[in-house]
Amino acid sequence: MKKRLFIGLGVLLLVLAGLILKTLSDAGQFKQLSPHFAGRCAPVSGMPGAEDITFHPTLGYAYVSSDDRRATQAGRPVQGGIYRYDPASSEPPMLLTAAFPHSFHPHGLGLFVAPDGTQTLYVVNHPAPGQQQIERFEVGADGMLVHRQTLRDAALVSPNDVVAVDSERFYVTNDHRFPPGALQVVEDYLQLALGNVLYFDGRSFREVVRDTAYANGINRSADGRAVYLAQSVGRSLTVYTRDADSGALTEQRTIPLGSGPDNIEVDAQGHLWLGSHPKLLDFAAHANDVSGATRAPAQVLRLKAPGDSLDTEEVFLDDGRQTAGSAVAAVSGKWMLLGPVFEKELLRCELP
Image (cartoon, rainbow, N blue to C red):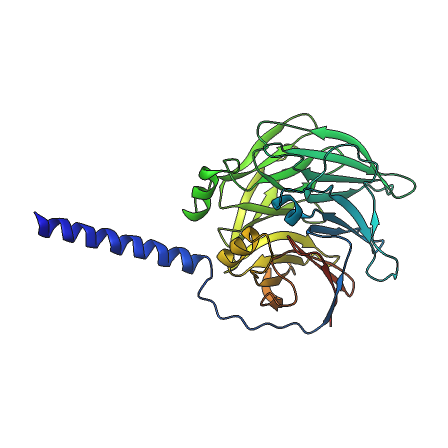
C-alpha cells in the first residue's frame, strides 16, 4: 500500500514539474535575449503609462492613451488622459481630455478618420474597479476631444483594445472571460483560451470571435477587409477576413510569433508593428511590482505585408534597462513611438 502511495506521489510530482516547465517554456522564460536597435531613442516625459498610441494617418501627430497605473496600484489614482504628440515638433505633449468630467483611466484606443477629415476616437475606459466602458470622442475644431457617448454592456468583462470601423462601429477585445480575481489568475496560469472579440454595430454588442488566448491588441487593414488580432498567451497573431455588411470575422490564418504580442499598429505601407513581451512572466512580475524595480524586456516586431506573406522581423529589443514592458510601437515616417504600460516616459525613436 505504501509503495503504491509513493509511486502515485512520484507520478503526481513529475506531472506537476512537467506543467511548471511547460508554463515557463511557453512564457519564454528560457530565452536568451540580445538587445539591439539600429536607430536612436530618447525618453519623452509627461505621458506616464502610455499603453496605446496611434498616429493620424496623414498629419504626423499621434494620440497617446496615458494612465499612471503605479499611482493606482499604490491606492492614489490620478486622472488619466489622451494626449496629442508630434515627434517631429519641439512642442510638448498636449492634454486633450482636460474637460472630461468623469473618472478616466484609458486603455486601448482606436481612431477613425472620415473622408471629410472628421476624426472619431474610441477609448477603453476603466473608471473604477469592476467598471468597464467605451468612450466615444470627436475631435473639435480646436483639436481638443469632445465627449459624445459612453457605452456600457455586460459583455464588456475585461476590455483591452478597440479598433474603429467607422464613426459608429468598432471591435473590442476582452482579454479574459472573468473579471479581475482568482478565476482570472487561473485563466492566465493554465493558459485557458477564454477571451473573445465583440462587435458593436452602432446599436448593440455581439460576440464575433471566441476562445482566444488573451485577446489583446486589435487593428484592421486600410481597406477594412482584414482584421488583425494579437493573442498574448497564445503568442500569435490571427488574421481574419471581415464581412463589411454583418461585421462577421472569418479566420484566415494564425501566425506564431514566439512572443506575447500586445498592441498592433499599421503604418502607411500596410506593415504591422507589434509591441511584444518576449518573457511573459517577467512582464507579470514587472506589472505586480509597485516600485517598478522589477524590469521586463521590451520588444518590437514588424510584420511586412507585401500581399499575404507577413514576414516577421524583430526591429527592437531591450532587456529592461532603457524601457520596460512596452505595449505598443506606433510608426509614422521615420518616427517610432514606444509606449510602456507602467513607465513614466515613452520612447521617441528615429528609425534607421
